Length: 262
Ligand code: SF4
Image (cartoon, rainbow, N blue to C red; front, side):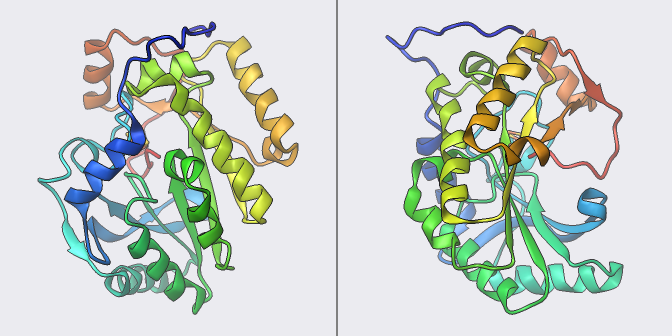
């Protein structure tokens, strides 16, 4: 999939910020958020514990999260920040790790829930990895400023594709939203919050990968050092969805069932 200049006259696709607001009505209740489970062991960051969130504001065609993203009303239960922390804490003690996170959906939905969870994390010796597609943080600078007070936080911003045109094809969202994760990273770096970028490259050619890396370098050279280059996993449902949308992939990773989609 190559990248070219897209017309901005008429922008097809959905608005991820509007979809976030609509999804929050389904997966957020006061300070509670929906999760499928609270303590799964993952191989990431040298071994971590992750809760499975419900609800995302993108619809990446290569996402394997399935029901938590595509049918958020049908899965999961509501949990308070304390219940989520306790679940993560329990599993982290069992597996002797200090890295905790939530994955399989968008981590910034339900701001009050997240901030209260991070308050609990800050009173512990865990590091919380906030997995995000960067849409909300890129559009809401106050949200980023509200994260600044947390010392046990790392934000992983995942970029879907290597240019606006590719982003639109992969997610169905408005191509202009491709800019938001870059804005999120810029604001996070300015606020001094620990962060890194992750680039999905399975549908990109070498020229567009190089251009996206250049953008990250221009934002802050250190982003290239910590960059994660992500290749999709062709789970059966993902393969079916990609076929339906006639999307060809250049690069895949072997399937490991502990992988996470963000
Ligand atoms: S890959 Fe991530 S951002 Fe995309 S739909 Fe799945 S959970 Fe959401």
